[in-house]
Length: 99
Image (cartoon, rainbow, N blue to C red; front, side, top):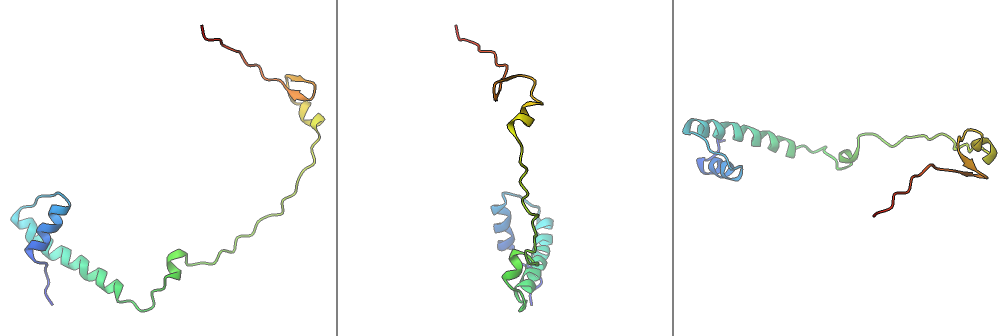
């Protein structure tokens, strides 16, 4: 098995990445990129790899609490409102007119 990529392949990768490299770096990349591709090929060879594992390795066992609604009267809410008009909360809004 060849332990390095062809020079043209490394130059193609450098071109795609819009990078330049010296002759020494190209030789280094021929070996290093080949090692990376070999490792990727090892992953592809796994037989027990399941697409189900891509989603999540656990089952969704989420439990939610009961939705207890509180009964609140309008009068109780309005007790804490500083500015009100009847059964409504009054907002202090300053209207600015364009001149």
